Length: 319
Image (cartoon, rainbow, N blue to C red; front, side):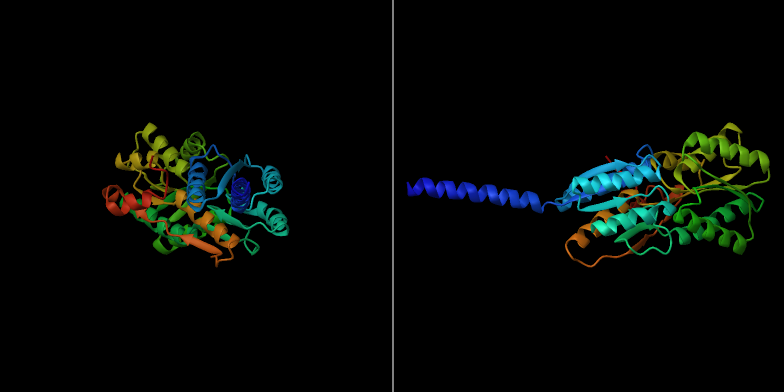
């Protein structure tokens, strides 16, 4: 009888311990502005990878580029009982009500790719690229390429300027153009971040400005679209193309001579680092509110180097 009671007590203890472990396991939600864009899928992989490593549950939502849907996702996530949120916001201007709500709920929030509206402080971390410095570096490089082709006029295919990262890119680029003797003759903002839209905008830019010698692509599809437009016109290499972000597609285009340089943005790395920050917050550890990751320039002659491979491993999934 005593033996049976011991077995029963041990069984109850095991069940209680298992329940305690289950209750201790934290959940992180990733809210993407859209999951039909590779970049945000790659951030998701980073969040999922780090969550698994830390023993966290992972759930994801897409806001379908709607601020209203973004708020709905936050409420659903809280109702579901998530402990932390990693977000790529629809826009920086959409973030104040989102952050105010989650602050009241006591949920740590880390941004990826796009930061909150400037001036806000009620968030755990913003893991983004060093957009201003990248804007300067890419602007200078783009200007140099234009001059090598006999001119100083450049065009730009831009991210939406209601995003703080796009504003920083533009500010840095404009300063670099002014300092290096180039003129930004036209900037076109994307609405859908698609290659087809970028092809159309690149053609519009080239038609309106036949003396443009270089195109600054602020996002990956812009580089692909510009390269395709130039190929159709039989002008590959005659007008230089630079791009930020990086993907297997733009890497191949660079190897083919259609793109002259990529400033790599660590999408997977941002997901990893943002998840680590909210995990630290949940555990009462010190966090870093603003993490601006470097975006190194890689050119075709360096793309197969060990240094470039190490960078690319944090840009998109390698499997």
